[in-house]
Length: 173
Length: 300
Image 1: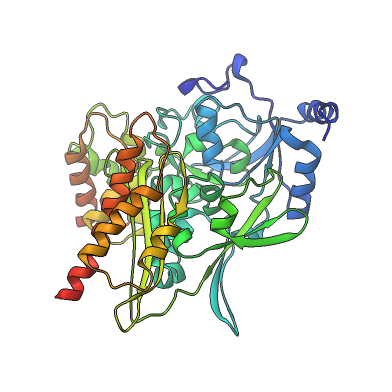
Image 2 (image 1 turned 60 degrees about the vertical axis):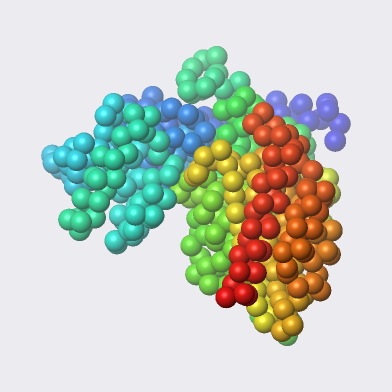
């Protein structure tokens, strides 16, 4: 393909970059016009002011930006806006039930499952995903489920205690 | 260029990439041919996002394949020759990893996928993306399972994955599916997949090895596939090593020879963390120690 033709096609595409998307965030319908390649984490934090979802590595390594799309755990830094059209997103702000903490949040609180707290929203989303999918996870399954969520305070002892408490109490999620 | 964690909603970082979402493979291919190097296919997008964050700008146009529904299918197929498994390349890694048929009949693949990234990444990343990356951690397992790959370049074409990886494919082509043949039947079989990284979990591999080995009733090896990868090296079959052990009974002496032959045949590029020699040694240790465990079982 000759370069001149390619450039003219690219130029024509520049006029059509914004897209309307509609989605549910924590059960609230939203519709907005957006650059389709905007990262979900930036949409959540900058457009919707849902700053519970944290940003750290930006490459799906740390898990600080973990959220759920249609009930499936994802890294919000690895998802683009066009990929969430018609999707249902759950963030840490949507986990609590009415005015009380979710049992996972309560367990983290009572078992010392956080220190600086930066990784905590992502950790809780990962634990929620685990207990949603696995009725009675083994130690190995807990480790695997949290393998993509890093705590730089290294407070894993309290985190694992919190997860085990949630499981032991057979919380209905 | 995207600047680290600042995101790209600031004025200086506004991205002008457009995205199209064709629903047929023919439309996707036609769009790529029209746009040429200005466009790139995208599916789960995890690899493109990783590269974007590392400084590779997005192309001006992304062609999303996600709405080509049949490319996510996983089907067990049967014919007069036997059975096989067709895996659409858009199937997510997590779907493949937990798929009952894969876990039951091709567990090596399920085991390999569990070593790729984290659950959240596997929920988005696709098996096709892991292959097209050309250094994905599933590739050694797929090589030992004798996977075939099908792609579309105006017509559908198929080839053994190992041959496919040795070619420079045109960038317009779309890989569409993988096919796993039924595992070979033998008196005894063993297969393994081992990945070594800089830490125990959730880390790109330094060395990955995989093998599928069958013995006849005389305890001679009558079928073997050995594959190695890791780091920035496209995984490869160790064909000379395979030839060496075919027809032989595994013994300590054979394993000592095999150790040397792995080192002679596997010649990976060094990187910032590991030398060629280190990768060779680890690969040889892994392969020989796994086969030695089979020898131990035979004795007991």
